[in-house]
Length: 411
Image 1 (spheres, rainbow, N blue to C red):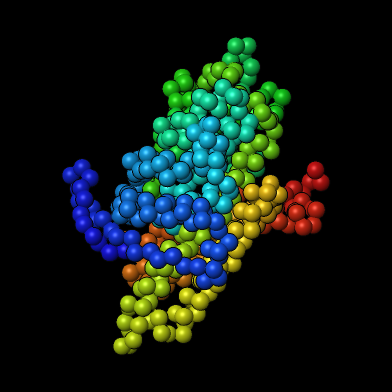
Image 2 (image 1 turned 180 degrees about the horizontal axis):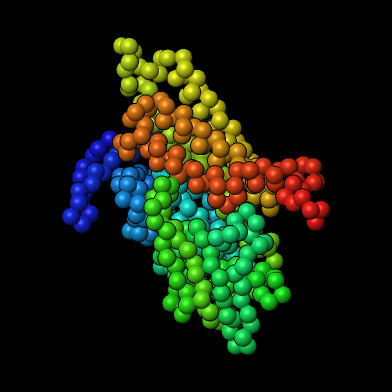
């Protein structure tokens, strides 16, 4: 990026930067996309370059979420793009959803997190498991950005083992009484509605729609993050919260319900991180041609070319993997294990590319003049959330062997 102009925020001055990103498609994967897919990509990319890229670095430096982008995210269809039009969505296919996530994360993982949580972890469960009344009440406002949502599954002591959750609710006759806490929740401090997963008195997991303003419900923000700094993250705390019975998701119960939502979110991540990898590659390629050492561009050095060649190779493999996964999602054939493989592979790929791109940029790679370190720090979170790198490996192991490595007590 290059400095283009100065803008003010309060009494401070910030640099706006021009987004110089160029598209990279080494294997002609674009030919596998429809004209609609490419039109969606181009429109989202244009919005990102105009309204998001120029400000993202400064908001990351301030560790602040740019709330003013919410209407723009809604306008480009980033909130629930595959939700039917009758509920405010655009009725797009799964590849379209992936493309949107890729273009957003090409700018910043935190912005993609905001959109993918809204889409896959809030709108998706309401659409799939909600009552007609719940769909009509919440989905149009979530699609338009009038409402922001969050998803409460992870707890302070239960991450990779969500079945051990302690958050619970009791039937009090005319309402449910909810108690417990959730941690590491994207969007929670600004959310109007939280999809909260909790156990009933029989230990069965259900989804509850907890709305802002309910007595006993608080969502404090988590500060001092080194990663996802342009995303807002917090807790969900429930102290005898009275939840109306009509706010229970009636369509499905059990741990499989939230895990199915995570499938959708992980699919979006598999696409999204390719965007981060492409941005790092694009910046490294351009920098290597401009940076002169020993009287020649460093792009002429063998070791630099090795890094760049390996980057585009791994990006290409990930592009083909996610395209095929998108086809399977469209056909209703993609398995949870297949989604896990793509999420794990692509995040690992993107993180390695960010680290190699930082090397090519040398000392400049740690500055905000380039996006590399911001992507690298963001991806350190993405490789952990919605299923850690190692847990996804064991999911593949279980799928190919039929033997679970998650427990050692024979259960």
